Length: 342
Image (cartoon, rainbow, N blue to C red):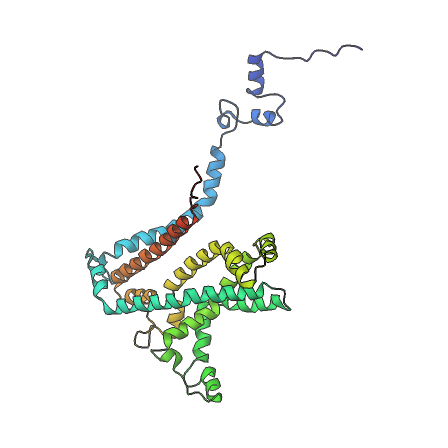
């Protein structure tokens, strides 16, 4: 068998000059060697400078929008909370006077109480109702897809539209609700015009729309529960209650924590429903913190005072979020077993 000719090789220095220091067997070596010198590192790999410039050119508009619409207003409003500003005349520095005035303002105290009461009613009820409906809709029943859609539809309706709709339904004189009550022999109710009922009616409207979100989240979580765990519990003789308490609820704990934080933040920031339906009345019974902030800043033209109230709310939201994370982190720590080190 004739011997194959020896491959033609070049000295290392000559090869480096010809190929730019790249392995000739590398498929990308030829392409890199044809790059201009300013785009090649000493080792031969292309610089990322051009790619970085292109990437920053694409994300720069989004970064500018984020800075202009979020970070800059946050900093400006924080400085505004230490000033007396009516949005027309030049502002003057007052230090902590706005925060001291909030502590003594009975209207702000009433707004805080209304917000806390609204949150205390809405958050647990929405989570409990969402879980109950999710457990029902997680079963194989006829037209279950239709029922899930009907429950979720109110969530996608804007709060403004909800307020307009229920303002007509709950009108004390011409509303459909009092017409139904009259047919049933029940005396007409004030609903949104009654100081004793208005806040409770707002909670009911919020439950009608906000429970659908909890249902969808819980449904997704229930479908992720391991079927093997459920089957093992049933083989051990667990009934529905024990199955829910010892298998499903522990698996839903992360979802429940998320919904607790999410619903609490939404409840503390409720505004548009109040603005459309009651405008803080009657007699301030539905004035919540965000409506109080809007009223002070844009109705009474005391922007610095409203900014101070906004930062009190921001601190409250931060405490809720951080506190929930700390509680969750502490509960997630492994419990030491006695005698494990022996």
